[in-house]
Image 1 (spheres, rainbow, N blue to C red):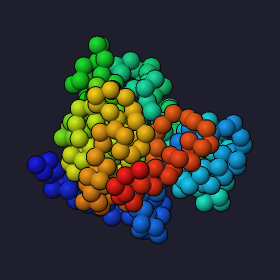
Image 2 (cartoon, rainbow, N blue to C red):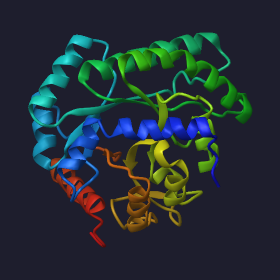
Image 3 (cartoon, one colour):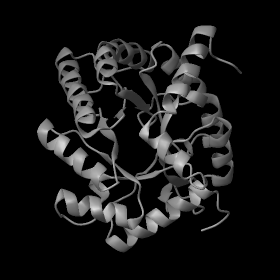
Length: 296
């Protein structure tokens, strides 16, 4: 089913062409055997070392880059970004989240807090040299209905789009367990209704396994997918699993779906913090996903 009108088709096609210029895409072109540069989340890097020690460890473990968090000190953010690039392990994304002050809230004070948080995250992303700001757009609750979450979040995210465009930072909406955007058709429609190339999808593979099939979501979202997070999930035991092939994600089919939509950008891990040996093993397992290996 083609859910895009002509305007959105042209918008998404143009965005796809622009995405080819991103650092992630450029790195993928340089390493065609692994078209998905792999990133570690800053908070999951083992140890409590300095910025340089953390970045060196991440690079030496086999990761290509980092997904970090907002920083109040933008000069420190610039220094961290420059250091990461100098060590060939750039920061590609900033995770804002949005759970504490969701854009779906009916409370003006929460929206004011949320706008300040999003602005800081966008400016942090610019400072570190990232290209993406991850956003959880809404939370459905007993007091905020699905329809209200949809309407409120779109209304409250729109004022942040001009700043994202000015800074050149993508607002990437993540699918999470927030009782919202529960089908790929809804996710596509939600993104399209912004009518902006600066709002796209940050697709989490594992987050849809409990109620869907990642490959279906990938094919439906298509060029709307700006970034991807790697996770695996086991339906029978209702638990997260090691990558790959220990959960119910059909990784070869997921890889095929990503190939079909022409995705060539970052894959970021999202797993509990472990020791250095576990960190290195995670990087090795993520390489299997990029190379399309049949088993771990």
